[in-house]
Image (tube, rainbow, N blue to C red; front, side):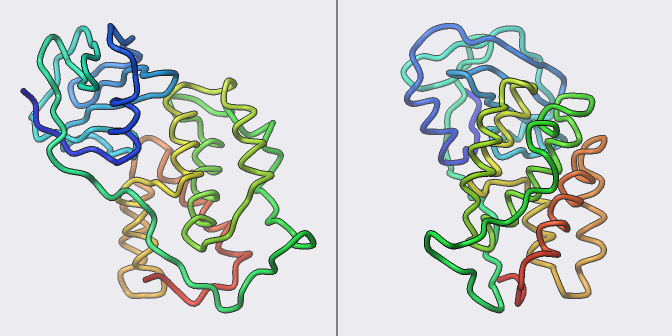
Length: 228
């Protein structure tokens, strides 16, 4: 068996999915992604980006050709991937210097652009504009600021982007992020912020840079005290 750590929603997705083969949508030596009930579930080594939709292994590499589900357990080439620990992938809490207005008259934060034009714009498995939206959404979840209209607009456009990016946008709307993003939020306003920002910006080809850009746009419009 392959022991792994799992984010809670990934564990529940596996448990709720029907038995049978699942499509492999991307494979490499450090990460494999499969389609489980219309969303991406990854299995990653320590060398890969620990995306919040992935099961994390301590394997030095992955060589996977096929995947299937049986009894809520993912099997890679017949080997069961067994969840032994639950991972916390939530954003740290950001505290507002002043409460945001509530109720019907509350003005929702403006998105960083036209969501319909942004989703799917860019290259690779996670287009750059999707990463910008992920950063923006995650900061609002960290601050406890709801963005229902933007959430709905993003959800309506998920079929315009890759399966992995659609899944990560959904994760961001739930406040689920990569460790580098969480580390940067915790470092805000401290001497550790610049190196933490550099680590985040180095994630992927442009993914970290996009998340950082979207997060900073969100922070610029929020009255924050800092991170906890």
